[in-house]
Image (cartoon, one colour):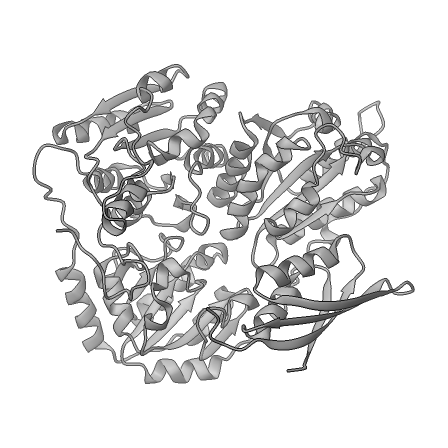
Length: 554
Length: 84
């Protein structure tokens, strides 16, 4: 140790972060976390000042999802800590490893309704995988190691560590060996492999249903090999996109509420559903008792609670997907089924011959996807643009498509893209956003300016809260309520105020040149794509309907 | 609106005596759709293991709650006595 000052709790925090390979953190300082920010000055960890703690938490999520490492965010007590909560809830819902550090008022002041005091420890119970409040300096180091261990162990998730200010300032000497805490504690596998093999051997119309757990288990290769060797037709959830080979003739795309017709019809008719790292989410299943109604289920998952939660598994296989899935590989005689789904896929292919000169967002997104460099990371916000991106862009790895799946959090895209770009500085990062969502964390344009982060912002602008407007039109008799955003700011002028280059397009003929200009530009770029406010996302499984009852474009 | 009858269960939960473990168990129990009808809790100060007896009712299968409580970091075991 070269510091002349004794090690404090704040200094210890950064030593532990470095032990865990943390190079970057996202945060915002304030009164109760000042000793930690003081220690930051002497640390090797690079801090990114976001302009709202929610931005910091989403940047940590984007960082984690793009890199596979733990994302770290920091905030002060009270409002700083509460502003992290949406990001933590998002990380919990999508199983993302994040460690959040919050400052707390000094131990002696806790419970006195002190300035900027809030019970973030209590608030964290419903939005973290686990949380700690450090009550003595001697606990701090072990707690921090445990936070990383818990965030990464089994089904990943966010962990919060609340550190009172006096503990941040306290002197500390002891150092533990981090490796002593880093052991995998996944419980005994519940693996009904024999039953699963029997079910698979008997299946005439099996479907492989792939979710976000595949990427998190680092099992993309295993799933692709399994799909190829068995020839089983496959579908993906929103979070599973990128896990399957999109060139596989038996891959049918996304299933669910805005899934492809081919995927939904094939799943409806299948006699065996092999769920891998997927959890039968309501946006996937539609009306649950009519989801794959004739199918037996083999369910691979790392988390016991997902087995039998929404659909009873005939063969549950709990444990490491990477090890377990290859055990099921066999050759199958399902040529007729393959021909059926391939015909469905051909019959239901997307069409991009949209009439008129107005810009058709799905065609723009398809073109971006075809032009963007390999290993481009795309983030989205939430709404119509998100579903269009999921439907019409293709990804070769789940870490290249970051979207708020379970929580559906507007405001996710921009800060997540910042985190992704910092974790992968040599890759292109594009945020596909909407004119509603982008305003939720618009202040992060200042973070882009400060650190010259070359994120490309593709803003699909219909001057509406488009998805809500679509539902109001379809399911609320066209009674439009609070979905008009025609008084939006001038987005190009707004971005220019943060030194971001911009372009606005309104006609089909401008699309290709504009996409190339955006991708060729070295720095940050905002491309505003004006579209018709009446464009809808199709197909759509209406609420409380089976997935074979999709509504389609008129 | 409920179509299934409420079933009563007694859960015996063994847990490390850690911060807010009781709050975590109660939060998970409520969130997962179980009514809490009563509870007893005591700590063995020698082992720092707490034993919590939780009386709950729900129309949902008790296995869903057992799995969710078992998943909490400090929990050592969860057993159920069906007192329906």
